[in-house]
Image (cartoon, rainbow, N blue to C red; front, side, top):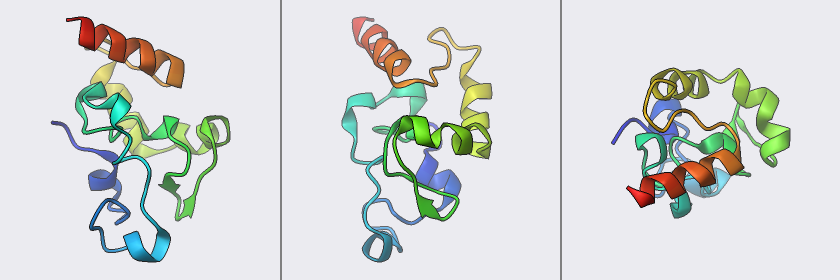
Amino acid sequence: MKQNCWEFKKCGREPGGEKEKQLGPCPVPGYTAMDGLHGGKNSGRACWAIAGSLCGGKVQGDEEQKRKVCWECEFFKLVKKEEETTSLGFSHTRLGMDRTVQKMRAR
């Protein structure tokens, strides 16, 4: 597995994280539908498509509201750079990610 967002950002909202009780659990580590996408655990390498993740010290909104913040995020840029050249490519939208997951499962 590659590095997940909660490991990179050190947000502490993952299960058992130091800020989970204070800020609430992040939905990204628990969203299993994208497990394995971009080599991550659950949605750990697709956090920009999950509403309610913690970015910039505050809880973000839906995918559309997050887009501006996420396009400037160093983790987003890292995943994009690492995945653009892979056989499945890089997915930045929820629809694209769903299609990539379907391709992964068909292999």
